[in-house]
Image 1: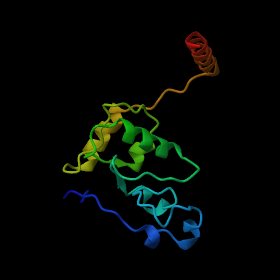
Image 2: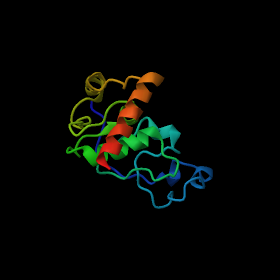
Image 3: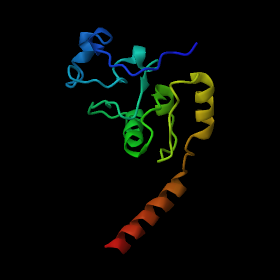
Length: 141
């Protein structure tokens, strides 16, 4: 049957050993369901856009995407997996996660198809974009 995708807060002290807790000053008060220090459970856990996000100083790309999704999404009742958050794709206002009442695998497959990876830019393309941004900034001043 379906996995239970109900929202639950888990005390991470039991899942992360004390050595790792010393790496994060927010450890004791943090209730973020996805913790970069909890590598053992990271890939199995889920995150809803209205839940807490990791506050470590060293911000990982998937944590940046969490922040973007939380800011832009209008649907807080769908969830995201680590695989989804770790995917280098565009985050927009229409982005939604997976429905907790449906089977995850087919939804995830569709979600990954709908959210292709960003294309890497060549150095020449990057320089063109940088120059265009500089021109726009000088026009605004």
